[in-house]
Length: 254
Image: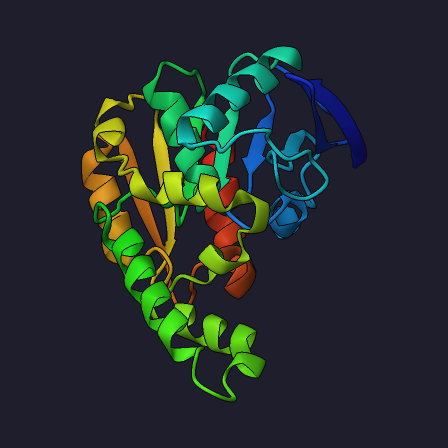
């Protein structure tokens, strides 16, 4: 495996490349939010022909100069593939990485196959943003009480964990991007995808519940859903043998 860098629109992008890279038959991996390419290493470690990149703002890649939504990340993916002359890859995305792939594919981006791993995209519009606002207001009042300011960070993390929103307080410089991304429901985009799509979901996923995977399956016409037993949002870590069996079978069938 090789570590490489490339410049896309003045942003330094870091990525990993397999030992026998072939731009005509490669698998391109996109990680989830608040993550990086190496978090998917259990999937691509034994592959020889792949690209796994740190999306802008994550890992060792530069931070975008403005707040990006899924559309900007999808546009970036198009440019990245073009610069490496990757014509029609297999695209594999976990969580937010899957959202980027769906946005890319719904806008005419080409791929041999799409593999979505517990991918986000089904959202109750505005719900989390509303919860953030309510929680922030409560927090401001509560933290004015004597003695609580010392525990500010711990209290905030606990509170946002209660509404399954730890990514919000950990977004840092990407907070505005995160707000944009979670406002966008990709249901309509899913219905535009015509590429063969494979969904791999952990049955106990709490971040993107299985019900979202089932709805994604119904919305993407040419799709197949695999459910990994006794696995959560990171099924490739929770049940690596079962996950790899599914993943490699689908790669071989392409």
